[in-house]
Image (cartoon, rainbow, N blue to C red; front, side, top):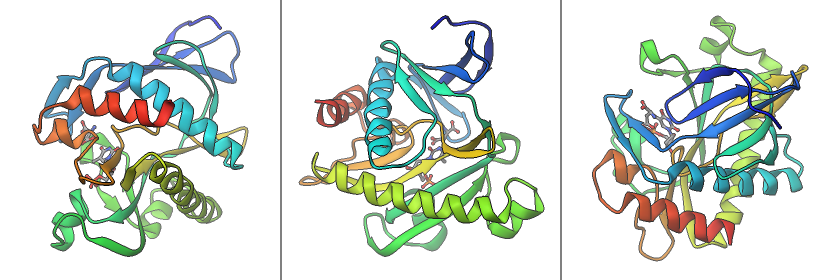
Length: 234
Ligand code: TMP
Ligand code: ASP
């Protein structure tokens, strides 16, 4: 599959057109940002690990009947995906308190939540991706009520499936972010599923094995991505 014109460059990925208008190439970079890109850095080989991790997890979800944009892995840093009209909502699912939930609700980090908590954030850098509710999604015209219902259901199913899978790899899925989009009117899971957008803790030691190591300067960042890749992909 030939890479053509660049369509879009984000903080961690680049999208390229292909000779098929329905398909695009998603290229994974080593660049990392945090706190609305106020903090920037490079995580060596992150692109390679994230491409591999995402490919394995999308394949797994596909086998479980979840419709995603993933077609196949093309190379170390590239995957072929279906072209999406992205829905500008970041869908976060949480199983344990951490990050912005801890801050917003005054929960100390690491408390198991009785039920998964689902949140929507408006994907708009200029506003700092604010937390929004269903009414805001409707007000902004981001998705129809039917789409919102489908997104909720799909995100909670993905949570159950990923939790189960990661548990067998000795990883706790603390929380994660998903993005959805439309492909010829069909709702598909898009973007990536990687330690950039998931909080993953080691089951035994509760050690953080995700981008929080970069956000909080905890050290051993590359090692964490490499280890997650080893556990998930081997
Ligand atoms: P939060 O606790 O900062 O709201 O993050 C919740 C989850 O969403 C966490 O697993 C990291 C992921 N996330 C992203 O993928 N992109 C972002 O811009 C932010 C803020 C969080
Ligand atoms: N990637 C996001 C940013 O640069 C935030 C994050 O993941 O913490 O703003």
